[in-house]
Length: 143
Length: 31
Image (cartoon, rainbow over all chains, first blue to last red; front, side, top):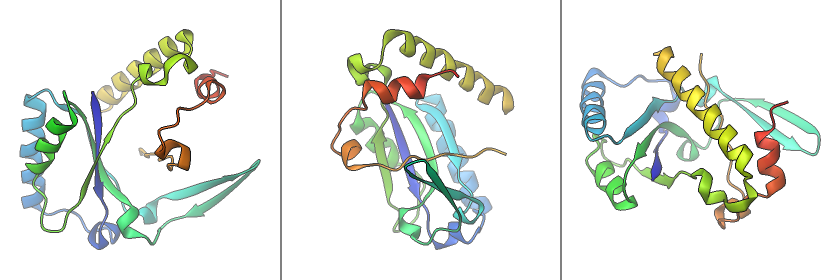
């Protein structure tokens, strides 16, 4: 099963402050451990919300609001996607992550195609698998 | 540049209500 591990934004990340060398080194080590354990599927950091936008849907109307967004605690500053055998395994990995005081990390299970049941028709399931595999290959080439 | 597009939760998604066949089909449409 897959889990998304969400790292919350804080005033520093929202101010665009870059992580220092020590943090980058520690995170790099942690990511190598994840990779060696076959857990790591994706790891990304997100730029401050000032570089983003929101699109609100209302009927046929689309309203675009540029960042920054003010509720820092609700914002995400980075994420991993992990392949693990249980939520407990994900929790154990999160506990070992090199975060400082007051960090709060959220763990969310990722839907698998089978979770949707009969509402996802078999032909679309195959198509989705193909499209995702292509996207993953593209992401790999891009590195 | 790359962007992450986040879809907010709704009452239904928080309650674990599965998306309709109609929505899944529209998301999967190729044109």
